[in-house]
Length: 464
Image 1: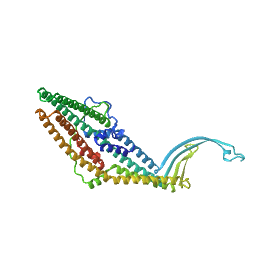
Image 2 (image 1 turned 120 degrees about the vertical axis):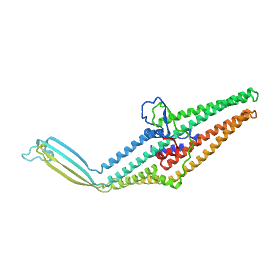
Image 3 (image 1 turned 135 degrees about the vertical axis):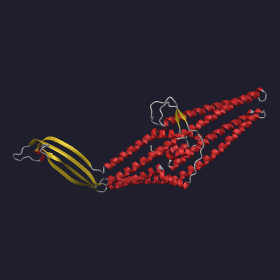
């Protein structure tokens, strides 16, 4: 799986509304898996800030570890290509005893020449060297592997940013769940108080028994909502612990709270310039295009002459003590005359890959401005949604207080009270969700700028 294939489902997930996320695409499994850095959980819950979670994820997340090995593989291929341009040397020492059959070499019928000669000893100690003098194919192959190595390094940066987004998203969801638990607990407390009020009003003959039943229904609904919120929080904590490589069974305590913090003002043209210089997917696309062009040059160079020098020096004789120094120096020119169309086929494949990589690069370059523009629009809309949700939450609380006063005065039924409780619940959920969406919008902006690692925590907030 390539780093870009990590990003697409993750960004789609982050961009989806809350209801769609429950049924929408999930991030690739490796983004939410980690390699534990310790074997056993601690007895006490582990305090975990957003910064702690991100740093642990970068150290222990499976996707980062896998991509690091891809970088190591690309580096080994670069070293292999470099070795084709460097001299190769080997040393051998041989001591043998031989008997030769002269007839095997055409020496038969000569009077006085025996058919067998020997046994006699042969000692040969030799240093052999082979060096390329001109090999354009190997030179361009090295350039291709160097570019591929750069692409792998950029891919690693891309994966690290994606892991920061994935871990940060789970942490933000858990923070939102904590707010939902607190809101649900407050609604249970309110429901309990309203049940007692309804019972008192009923005992005083001011309201009918059905009003008491209606409030008891609301009380049970509030308790059910609290259970759902607590369960969602526990599941997200488990998901977070696995994504950052905590041992199974390790309890955690989130130390950062879900608070709204406005994003800094960012000008579009400056953001595009910044993204062009920092985005890892753009660096990787450029490196892949360069690698493809070098591959094509290597395919063409296969048809050109190559010049190598071969030399050896050593001692040769019947014994080590009686051996004499000998050497050989030779130049070898290799020219391909007929390869059955293999070279033309290789060039055609290289041409196709160059066009593909250049098209991908053009798409990434053109997409930078679109993605930043979209991220800024999302951020602006999310900030406005937070303001609306805050006002709605305040109005719903005021509506509940007035409905409670009217019910206590006996001038309203429990229907009005239930409607006010529902409005408070909706207002709380809308505010929590809007803050979460605003944080995701800031995360998407950091992603579009190509500076997730350096700016995610500053944009989203949280202690370090």
